[in-house]
Length: 296
Length: 285
Image (cartoon, chains in turn brown, green):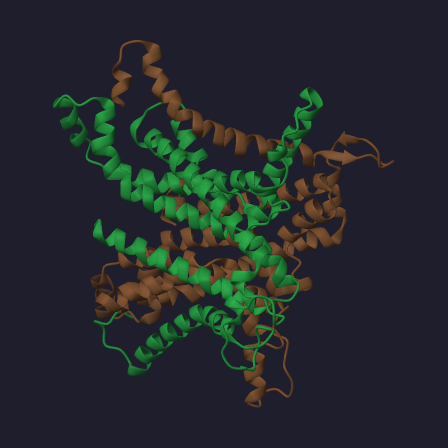
């Protein structure tokens, strides 16, 4: 309780609370709640057949299901995000283990800092680096040609694999940190005991390490999946015209075609997908939303 | 496996090899960006043509305009700094209010409130952007129809960018500040009250100094998040683009090494900021 709340009158009791609450309410209602309700309303405005007035209806959502390009892009974004999340987990796990269990003392501190540093640099700069490495006149094609692996420069940009690479790269930190934190709390003697009782690498990983790391895996996976689904830069810059990413569709509807109603419907579909999968992830692992968010 | 267990030397070698490869992967793109800021060629691509500082200092006379003479780029940095200052100040002030609400008060609906403040982290940045864009233009339209007001700050531009970025960065500031407030020893405040200090005096001499490091820390973090934000900004930027938006446009139209030069400056700044914050953190533990 705030001390001031002890003043006897009701007004004197409630005033400080309201003063503290006011900015939060303006923020949550004015910048989050109302804009999203407005977006929902906007997405339900359908242009009439004659092209004139707008009427209330689910027309924009029907367009989404009618037009293969739209729902395919949507499904593709979801599947690619799942693949990218799985790849991130597989790539990050050994490093989290290395940071938590193998590296010691100063080396460990140094490695932690080194792991954080690239993520202090803007995603734009990191993606730019990958473009310089992978484009057809870039560093890697240049070196491949120089050392005789290819006859002429190969284009390494604009493939699905390139998009995945970019997505994994920009998500690694959000997986490594929660994983390393949970692995750090795993008591070494448990692993030693399992070994003494005849366990091998695979059975120890399956029966001891993974169950212990489950909360970290869940938190990391959920955050990475959300970030990947909503990512714009990596798919668009590394995938070019072939990227077919759903956030790009939203941008196109809003900014290029100026069809805000359709764009709003797309936005809501993405929001629903993201929320559903996060919710499913939390249900599967039996965690509460607040817990998982605070861990990451 | 952990070092205390016997293990094949090859397995050990593989562990260290993987770690080395991982860090190479992490830093390779950054190293390439840095390297080509100094290449004496018009495109940031191999082969190496020798070193130059043109991409920083050339004044346009020789057909090259370096970073420090590129007015468009400098203006966009100015825009980004302005936006980042506003976002950081707003986030820290509102974040502090929220932290006190979370840690020090009880009210009906607090559980809902503590979940609601997490929402902006789950909403993709692009959607935050479009929802605020659509809502703001609706209000602007309404104000014009009803009262004939011209509310230009509700059209795409820097003020909207500030709103958009603030809407989720404040959540991060709130969580950071609340985490420190939680660890505060309330008996210190009670001691001050018992010694006759007023509420305000206690706040200024006990609570605020305790919170100062985290306030600075979350200011820096909010500043950086704002400066680097792309997704939300993309939807809300108007005719005065912040740096990330300008860089994006130039990257799509064929990058020049000026982008490497500005990237180098960004990297140095954020590395310094990161190291300073880590040092501060260590001192306070």
